[in-house]
Image 1 (tube, rainbow, N blue to C red):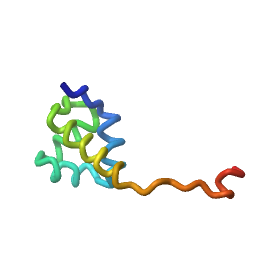
Image 2: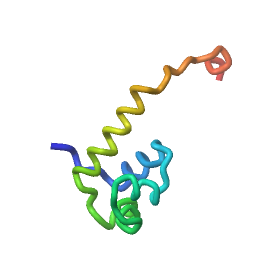
Image 3: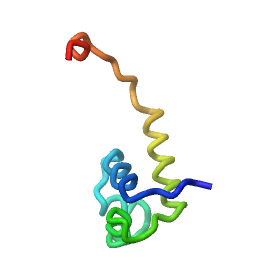
Image 4: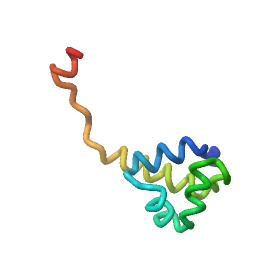
Length: 76
């Protein structure tokens, strides 16, 4: 079973996915108010929604190009 998703994790995840709460609501098929409620910890985030969000984060992480550290980065 999937671990419960916290409001903080939800906000962080949709930001990482480049979505607003409204866009996330549309993508997940819920109302704007529901997305807002999840972000404010007013409502529990269903396991199905959490699983979809986490799967998309993993999918995008696999597609992300590797980070290359430059000499300038090393000197900081």
